[in-house]
Amino acid sequence: MTSYILILFAYLLGSVPVGVILARIKGTDPRKVGSGNIGATNVMRAAGKATGILTLVGDTLKGFLPIVIASVFNEPRIVIGVVGLAAFLGHLFPVFLKFKGGKGVATALGVYLALDPFAVLIDVIVFVLVLLKWRFVSLGSLVGVAFMPLLLYLLHAPDHYMYLALIIGVFIFIKHKDNIRWLFAGTENKIGRSKDGN
Image 1 (cartoon, rainbow, N blue to C red):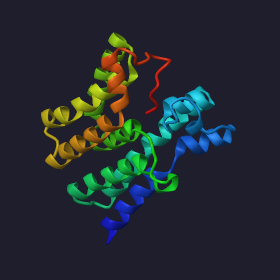
Image 2: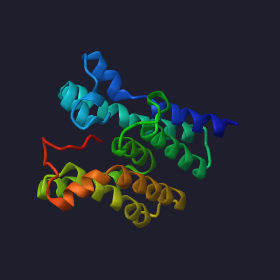
Image 3: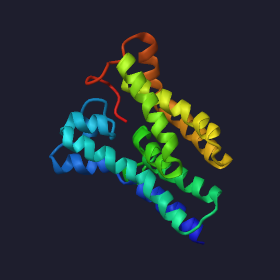
């Protein structure tokens, strides 16, 4: 029973639209600005840098906290993986926003931080290198997402966590389909002017 409660809690927490709540406090709605995305990048565009940073932190915690709590309850690794997936899917398909959510990068980051901080450290370095070289936030995010399953494998993480990273990666790539098209077309905006909002 505890496992089911934790999974439901993870989904509901993931569904909390942090960016929308914070932006509304500032008198705006990120869904009506820029890309219309509820993630940190577009919230920053709609409500300012500080609000965007707080959104990034909040969305990351949505992925991090449920796994920490599940670990405290000594849940099996497969349950911990499902809890992480539930939090991630909550952000993508939030019940509080009629299942229209964000792209999931920050929440995925929170999930990975709870599962393997060292893998995240390496992945962040990869992200920064890509960002410095090509200056596309979306490209850095996608490369980082693609690298995570490999990093978990090389660091001998449990198979359940690698499968989780693969599933998350598929969803994030699907959510970034427009960015991928823009990248291939050469029309994706670079740092500071991205159409994307993670």
